[in-house]
Image (cartoon, protein in one colour):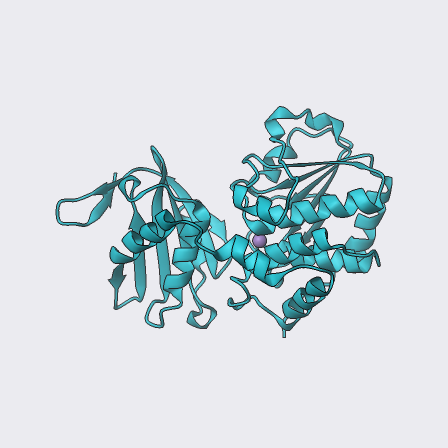
Length: 322
Ligand SMILES: [Mn+2]
């Protein structure tokens, strides 16, 4: 049983803000995952359907191609291409320390800022702040807001929300899947969302290159038995990787009973290494604490970081960071 905040007062205020807003900007975090994209898309569809305000959606990175299968007709605007002073409301969805924090520095003084998030380590503040790590996803909080307004959730909105929930729960496998999460998912299916279509778009390996990459990463896993720490490394030579694939590999490793902490690091670009950390709830480990020491962040069970450097293969078949 989770003890989640209900946000009734905040939802009431948010409803009022949307009714009086004229020009809204909704932004997801950089390198957006399906929870960020799903919450931004669902929220913009919802506002366009039931309110009069103009809505722009955006991100510092492009709309992920693979999500267009289930969330069509969407493009993100890059905040650097926009006059941010034009908006009277800006809304940050999911991991707001990665993007929304930059946007709010350039908005007009009278602009109302809103945060919907589920990261326990969020430091960015806003006029209206809804953040609770007891929710599986930002999409789940947003669903509760939509229900609060008594407005109908259509198939498009339901699909975007369920995609976010399924991604952040690893298709209902992770410990953040509560009974409320499953009830929410059931209701979204009632409103037309398809688990199988979302599953295919989110979790299927649709090319051989990805499978080969998994093979190389798993082959090179190093396991430190005494502490239960497993690390997989993907170098430039192993192939081009998307961060979603990295977290999938880390998640898979963390399900091995003897592995307490799984880490996957990869060469994101010429001088930048990104890493993904996973653990399972029963291990009672907070991997975000490790991510924090490397300048990153995230959830207790799933975190990430980004550090400067290069992964170099050594002659003994190992690797080092330069
Ligand atoms: Mn999320």
